[in-house]
Length: 154
Image (cartoon, rainbow, N blue to C red):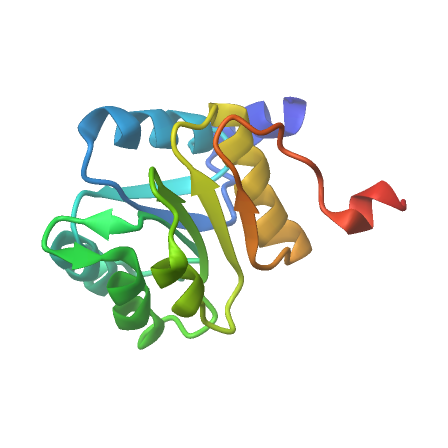
C-alpha cells in the first residue's frame, strides 16, 4: 500500500497500460483500479487506441481491452499494436468469452477476465501478467480469483 502511495505521489509509475473499453463507466472503473500503480492511457475504440499509441513516447507494457470493441475486435487491436510493441502483454475483458478468443491467442501473455469483475480482480490479473508472466488464464464470471500456481508453492 505504501509503495502504491509513493508511486502515485512522486510519479514513479514504471509500467504503462493502454485501456481500450467502449463503455465509459467500465473504462473509468478500470482506470481507477489501476491508476495508483501504473501509468494509464484510456481509449474507447481500436482507431483511437492506435492513434493514441502512435503519439505516445514511451513503451506501452500492457493492453487491457474489451474483446468486442465498436466495429472491430480486441484481438485486431492487439495485432496492430504488436507491430510497434512486439512484447506487448494483453488482458482481455469480456461479457461473453467464446472459442473465437481462444483461437486467436498469440504467443504473448494473455489473460481473459470475464465481466462483471471486481476492481481487485483486475488489479491482481494485471499484476500477474506484468510481474509473474502468467499465461492464458480465463477468470470466470463471479469466480474467486486464484493466484498463479507458482505462488501456491512459494
